[in-house]
Length: 135
Image (cartoon, rainbow, N blue to C red; front, side):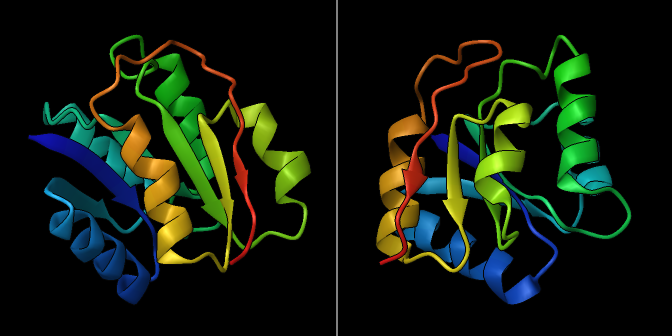
């Protein structure tokens, strides 16, 4: 089964994205912050892609991504950065995401961005950027 880890502090957004992925036949696990996401990954669950919000309490998305890239066992998992930051296009490339989604985004844009990354061999440090326009 294809797998996605959703790291998002807003419960409704987190649960909504998980439901949409489930409807597409994709297994989704969720975490409310970067520290909880590292816990899921350190427990051995390996997603095909991580959907990562940047602004979260406890451990931000930027802090999570730094820890992920420093761990050879986790570094190759591609990340889709999602955020409402006004400077997202400037800030996100430093995190080497596979794609970027600016909030608010449509579910169509979300699926068009995430589904192609699921079950695709990961490339360590991938830098391909796909900034989805707001629908």
